[in-house]
Structure formats: C-alpha cells, structure tokens
Figure: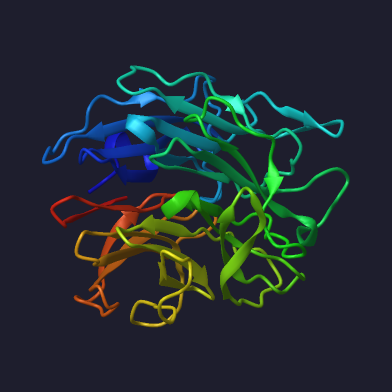
Length: 359
C-alpha cells in the first residue's frame, strides 16, 4: 500500500494489540514535518494523523539515511527520534552549533506528542541520523554515531547510546558502545532494537580505514561495554555509500538486514545474539538494491523488502521476497514502481501471519 497523505519514508511497527503504528514525513526534504497515525487490527483505514514535531519544519529527509525512526514501548508508549533540520534549535557542543538529535514521546491515549528534546549532550557530529529502541520493560535507547571534542575523521567516530529505564522520562548521559577503533561511516544510517533480557542490538557501518566499511551487528547491555560484534559483513569502498539497515524481533530470534555492494543481505540471530546460518540474499544478484526492511511473522516466515534504482534526488521502485522459516524463498521477487525521491519502504507482520508493505 502507499504511505497515507502522499508521505514518504514510512516507519511501521505492530503493537501487542494488533495495531499497525505508522510514522511518515511530509514537506520540504530539507525541512519538513513528521506525522504519526495507526490503524486497528483488521481495519482498512488509518486514524487522523497527528504531527510529531512541535517546531515546524524541523524534520529532515534528504539522503534517505537521516529520517525519523519509530519505537513502541511499555503499555502503549510511542517513541520517535529524528535528526533535526536547520529549522530546529541547534545544539552547542565544544563551542560549535550543531544539528540536534531530537526525541519525542506519545503518552498512551494522549492526543499529542510531548515537546521534542535534544539528546546530544557530549557526542556531536551527527551526520547519518540516529535510531531508537524500546521494550516492554520500560527501556528506551536513543542511538547515534558521532564524535567527541576536536576529533575528526570517520575512524574516530563511535556509536553512542543514551538509555532510559522509565519509558523515556529520564535518560542517562551517552556512552560509547561500539568496539574501540571500529569507527563509523559518517553518512550511513544506523538501526537499533531490544532483544530478550534488555540486550540492545545495533547495526551500523564501520570505518576502520578509509576503504574498510564493513557492516557490523553488535549486541550488549549498558552495564557491560563495549558491545560485542556478532556479525561483520565486509565491504571495501573508498566513499560513503549512504546505506541503511533494518532489524526485526521474532518470538525467539532477531533478524537483521543491510546493504553490501548493491545487494541486500539478511540474517537470523538466535536469542544469544549468535548468527544461526550464513548470510542470505535475494535471488538475481547485486545491482542498485538499497534500504532494506524486514518483518517476521508467527510462523517464522520473513518478508524482506528493499528499494531499487534510487539515488541522489532520484526515486525508483520497491521489491520484496518472502522466505520460509528455513530461509528458502517461497515466491519470486515482486516489484512496484513509483517510489518517490528520498522514499523508503516499510514492512510489518500481523498477528494472523499476513504481511503489509508500505511505500
């Protein structure tokens, strides 16, 4: 289905009650607005959307890597984080005005989001946007890669996390969680999600050297740093590919997806965080495949979706393939054209096992 109201960059999740929660962007890509809506289980229509950002035009969509992200927390809390545009209130770190990473939350049954707040206190240099995660125990984590002080260069970037244990009421100061020396590809996106037992999983592109930009999947808890690497997907490239990644949580395992050399890959991770099989890729080989999204249903089937033919200020199409619980493709790849400039695709699995794809 298409994103409501001609929006772009949909982010979707399914709540415990079967509601499909949806976040999307509208307006000027350099300074637009974020909207949240939902539809109830078995319903065809979305409720009237509400704007997330209080400061008009403070959302950002340029590059498809800096857009807003959505998380569902305990007892119906809705959480959103996004990189602020030039219209947002900047944050001053180390004597310089910088782009903020903004966070806002929606109280259960409330009609408007609480005012957004900047999450950068020590580590700035925001470029590839940020991410967030929430769980049923009240944890909320806002995640980004950045720099501290006068450090310059991607090899000095690190992944930082600010975590709350009270549904986003109070956050601890950010801490670096990535392995020392891993770096981070400046304008690539990042994705975070909680697993069993409060462990946090993060997918990001490293930058140990100018040409060593492996996608890393790391996992850990804030009381045992740094996180450990559970998957490294190498890619030797001498420029930033402006890539994004995806995470999905199943009943007994998590799933991650990323881009390498024009192909999208996905993998299953057991509750321990260890990969359960070799990395999987859709049929047809590499070439222009970017921005993966994935969802897993109650039967363990995985729907992987991605964009094709997109580029700087260029739209394209979406494609997807369905896999069984053993990772075997169940159907040929399907495609739709008409993905707008800076567009993304989102997928969710309903309680009855069906999937929805939104673009």
